[in-house]
Image (spheres, rainbow, N blue to C red):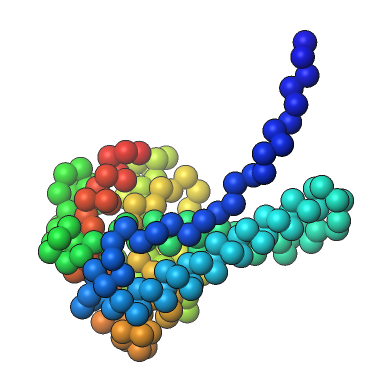
Amino acid sequence: MAVQKMATAPLQKYELPPLPYAPDALEPHISREQLTLHHDKHHQAYVTGANANLEKLEKGRQEGTEVDMKALLKELSFNMGGHILHTLFWPTMAPAGKGGGGTPGGALADRIDREWGSFDRFKAEFTKTAASVEGSGWAALTYNNMTDRLMIMQIEKHNNHVYPSSQILMVLDVWEHAYYVDYRNNRGQFIDAFWNVVNWDTVNKRLENL
Ligand code: MN
């Protein structure tokens, strides 16, 4: 039997995905300057970080150099979490009145009604969740396939408190870097503005495609 050769092509690097709309498309709720900084600088930093972490891991495998696995995997989890969450975040939004805002329909609306009783109750709970994230983190709407329920979660930094087997449907970044240009330290105003640009179609499709 022929011995299979190991693939020699280099493993894929992570890349910053482009925004799915123009950088000023979410104004006045999120300004061009705020969105550009967030996407081009902050998201890029997690992509760069994750690639650097993976290179270090790869170097350890190839050259047998000593790798502090605990520290490296912690950093990688932070950077990968940042990259994945931001990649989910951008399409969670759309220009207000052009796909953004309003209320969800379809399967998502039914699920929300079943879990919270009404959209308004869901919205209030998600708002409270986002507002009360301690320090830097995210609010997330998730579906858990073991319990067959929607759940709202807080994510600390980029990578803590996500329950295993949860699929993320919708995220809101409440790191200060997400709103400081537009709202200074007023996270509550940013969360209120976010509801005007939620792309319910994206969130619904993520649920339907599970
Ligand atoms: Mn961010």
